Image (tube, rainbow, N blue to C red; front, side, top):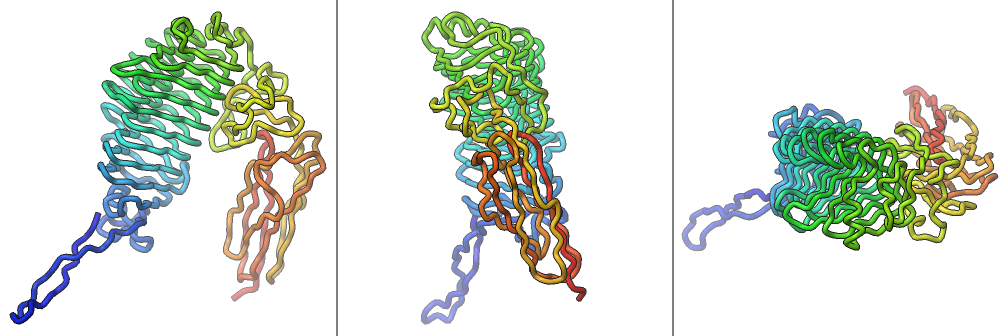
Length: 494
């Protein structure tokens, strides 16, 4: 993406002026905002109106920053291009297809990273929300209310796909399957998909199979994620359907919760693999049509199936030789906000899935779906499924508010673990105001601290005039909620 610059050159001895083209590099960043114009330069002061125009402007390898608001698709990433599209958060930046076509399309040979945005109201044959035939990375992205008339309502993946800290919800597919996400594609080889710390929920495969996920070619890995409430009422694999179509397929589930899905056969999982089927540290529960389809028997017979520390609620996954504990209720809670970017299904300390995996096992070295550590002090092991229960700690924050006068000042805020189990600070955010800042002194994130431990945060005011208000929000241990400190300042007038 380059532009012509005409430079006059005088021919020696002739007195003639000619123009010789030179190249000026395209910008490495572009901006999109409500009220912008695609005739503008896509700069921070003159933003574009559409993401597609900004993508066409920015140099390959550049970044498009998209502001708060709803922006119309389509967004097309062409072969040979590499671009990052960064929104202002999934609740703030919306890319909409307005039911006119797919929202984001990534061509073969192209690479795109989408972050901090929602992809919605896309409609397409093979994929409604995101159509990937190159390399795609979704990070903190919500893919919702899209339709694939042939398959892959939310995402059609015909290349290489990575999904992290994202939500694929309320999408619909007709035809092949994958209401949420079609990993691989018909007559496609060599593709792969990895899904981490994500939620795949309430997607539907109408008149077909694979309500949440359908993998038809390549390797699918899902880890530290929840797959729940997906539907394939007339087909197989309400949660996950794995069937080879024109190529080999494999499936790895690691710390995954598969619950409340439904299908005619294999409400949770229908695994017809030609590669390895690995299920470690996972939970299947309450899936209508069976937690697992009978195809899992064939995988065991063929020596393709491996499992460690997993359980189901109805015994359909726990066939002889599976290594899965069957007929056990993991006591899953409802899908609610337990901390982290997306809802999870928590388990209590009384759950038979709690602290099942020995603490020394590598499975306990990971983070759960909320990015909380699984290895916390005094535990004997870590949990099955996407959610890690780290016990109950009482967090007391003092003071509840900080009020500055009319001049520069600094205040320190102590956080005390007054409970009986370790405290983990999941996150700390400061809704900044001009003149008010926050600096952590000794409050590390995601490190378990023993009862009685105290850490300190510093908030400061620079004396700027007028009234200022901000909030310091701390998300505590194991989904016990957030606590807020109000910070105010009443600076001098004028």
